[in-house]
Every structure is written in structure tokens, then in C-alpha cells.
Length: 454
Ligand code: NAD
Image: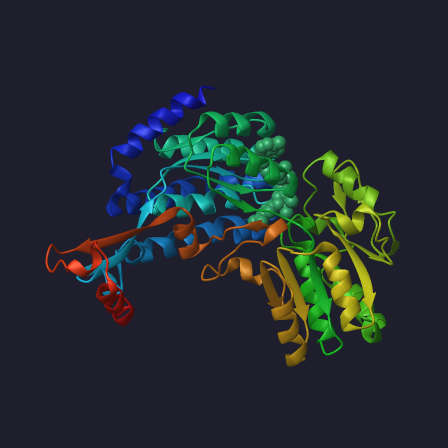
């Protein structure tokens, strides 16, 4: 595939200025919505084939979110593209200052396999809204969904505006970044590949956004409503079989309520049918399945542990006393396995949390206001959910993104528009007056005036 040629065509199209036009952008957003509507059944089928996603999960976390995001951006875009007036200091009198958000140019969006539709199309919405030309790189691992997305994009958009680069990321992505002359790379995926993307971009000074993973902890304080906390946690872990970047990875439980909470977790797991494969989706492939199975020996299984190798299914498995030196407690689990850890004091809690610092999310279950405030301010994480799991992802009024190892940059709603546009500073000055005080030669009087008026 000659990516270089496609990129040249996209550059020509971008330079024509067509994508700068607000009406063009709004029309493309509606075009995208029509495309998703036409392909909705095919997308649902593909998500079932790739991940065994139920229609409920697939609609709520992939297709429905995309519709909502398109409508929100469409409705608000006219406000975001407007030049924003800002005050000017006296030193540049008589001038008018403003900020204009302009398109970046050509952007590359790279997506992973776990929410293969939504994680590719959601950033695309922001990139269209901001007036860019786009190359999409879906995951080759969720191959059924990728095939459908490819057909959908090719049918509804011209290649010199939005194109698809399919294939093995190891080969395709470096080729795209080294030959593509992109103005921005937006990557969602693992930390290891994120590092490679960052270094590929750094060599060419291409700005990038990294939406990465990591181990997002849940904390159960003794003041928490244990029943509600247990149910919400199990729900958050079961969603997409735990293959969610913001899934609760492991749980820290205050020692005095440990036994009670474990019982509530088991009750909740049974209530939500976690011991029955029929309700569950599947692990994406054999490689991930085997990685997860190897974690089962890193602690004591107190619930679940069932596996179905033929259908790549793993039942929700709760593990006590996990080995802190094992991969289970160092790598992102990304599957339906939930290790439990007891903590006795605040200091011990922070010590344990700092082993896997900078998570994408923290879930804190507590009804103690002081304790909550302490955690909110002390922990460095992309987001904090109080008495909930995963909720922040679906609110397009919130920025979604990580810190340090869990990524940099944010998107969703207006934040997506911002990430794919550049805030251009504008200063418009009149020819008069043209005070001589700013021009050399400088003397004491001019310095005095400068100090007086600035
Ligand atoms: P991955 O990093 O292996 O792959 C992501 C994308 O990068 C794919 O399109 C792939 O083709 C490409 N790629 C793979 N190897 C590459 C290489 N060497 N050079 C360049 N590109 C390469 O991630 P994955 O396994 O598809 O997804 C799982 C990871 O993604 C988890 O760590 C998860 O936490 C993370 N994730 C993060 C978010 C978020 O929003 N922060 C969302 C979903 C998933």
C-alpha cells in the first residue's frame, strides 16, 4: 500500500481549505452518523464475532456513545470554532487579541482491539469537527470489526479526506509515521507500544496524544456501603470480560471490613451471573487467554477459576493474597480476574498504590468526606470515581485521559475538538496611535513610563 501517495492527496485536499468550512465539517459529522446507522447491524455482528459482546454491551459502550458524541459535537461546534476575544495589556495599546482554533492538518488515529469501533470512531468525530484530514489505523486483532469499519469508511468518505490503513501495526504504523508527514498522532493502546509511538513521533517533532492503560485500583474504605460497592465493582470488572482500559484492576480493602466485603463480592458475583459462562463474552484471542490463565496461580482463588479453552472464556475469578512480585500485580490484568489486597492504615494504602503509580482511574468507595478529599487530592490519576466504576467515561463533559504512564492528552466532547485543533493567537493592531516610548533609543524617562504602565 502506498501510504505516501495517499498522504500527498490528503495534504492537497487539506490545503484546498475545504475542511476549514464549518458547514463542510457539520455535513461530514452527519455523514458519519448516517454511515454508522447503515452499518449498525454489521458492527454489532462483528463485535459479537470478535469479543462475544452482547448487543446491550455493544450498543451501550460502542455504538450508542458514538451517536451521542456526534450529536453533542454537531450541536456545539459553531460555538467552538468562533474566535474568542481575550483582554490585551496596555503595552500593546491599541490592539485586539483573540484566540482562533484552527485545524492541525493531517492526523493519524490508531486504535486497540478492546472497544474496536468506539475507540477509533470517537476520536474521528473530534478530528472531523476540528477540520482535519484523517488516516485511521484500526486494530488488526479485532479483524471482523476492522473489516466492517473499513467498508463503512470507504463507502461514505473519499480517501483524500478520510482513509483507512489496515494491517499489522508493527509494520504499518512505523511506515505511516516515518513517511506520512502527519501533524498529529492520536494513539490508544498499551504502554509499551505508546513508548514506541512517542519515539517515532519525537524524531519528526510530531505532536502526539497517548491514551494508555495500566492498573486502575479500587479502594474500599470502612465507611463504604459494602453491598453497593461490591455490586458496582463486579459489574465494572465483568463489562467486556474485564478487557476495559479503566476496569477496576485490583481491590484494596480496609482490614476491619475485609471479611464482610469479600462475602458481599461473592454475593454480587453470583447475583450478576458471574459463575455462568452463558452471560459472558470472550477473551479476544488465544494469546491473551493464555496470559490470563497464567495469572491464576499467583494467589488463592476464592471464587470462580473456571475456564473454557475452546471458546476462550474465563469465569470471573476472585483471588486473595496475590503475589506482589508476580505479573498479576505488575501488569495490567485486562481480563475477568480480581485480586484482593488488605490494608491496615492510610500509609500502607498509599505505599501499595504507589507500586503502580499514575493509573488511568481510581475508584474510591467511601462515605467519609475527609478521607475522600484526601485521596482525591493526593492520588495522581487520570480520573477518580467516587462510589462508582467506569461512569466518568460516558460523560462527554469530562476530559478523558491519563497521566504519565497512563497517557497524556484528553478527549471526548469539547476536549476532542481541542486536542485536534491549534489555538492560534491573533493580535490585530490599528496603525494609530504609535507611541514612541517603545522605540529606541531608550532613556530613564521611557523606563519610568514602562514601569508606570505595566
Ligand atoms: P497495542 O498497543 O498492542 O495496539 C494498539 C494499536 O497499535 C493497534 O492498532 C496495533 O496495530 C498498533 N501496534 C501494535 N504494535 C505496534 C508497534 N510495535 N508499533 C506501532 N503500532 C503498533 O494495544 P492493544 O493490545 O490493542 O490494546 C490493549 C491496550 O490498550 C491496553 O493496555 C489498554 O489499557 C489500552 N487501552 C487504553 C485505552 C484508553 O482510552 N486509555 C482504551 C482502550 C485500551
